[in-house]
Length: 175
Image (cartoon, rainbow, N blue to C red; front, side, top):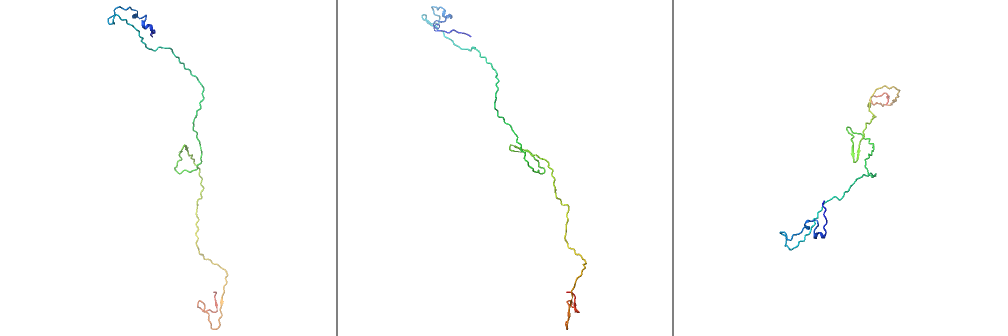
């Protein structure tokens, strides 16, 4: 790092004491290319200012960990299963399967069991056929019966003739 001395107003007019150009004696004759011999030159210093980064100091950062107990409310969601048992009592058709099915958010699982079926049936064991018919039978019946007879008495020349056309001698069998 280079340090420069600050110039003040008198240095710029007279020059700096450490500068050899300022302390040298000037010749009476001007060097070639210089202005006329009876002139006096005034020399002025100019400052050339530049900047550069220098370390001005340091910062030391140290990290420490602090453990602090903390309570944070958190909303947790979980699923619950609602189980409903509904009696159905429906007979399955031959070859029908009881498969689970979905209705919205509800899963329906049919429970199937074999059921002992006792059937008491009335069975016609035999028939009796009755046919009504008329049958004639000949029988002999004996009993006492009464009969009446008519008797005709004729007088004079009157003759009685029965239905059979045979003259009767005065009696007619039962009518």
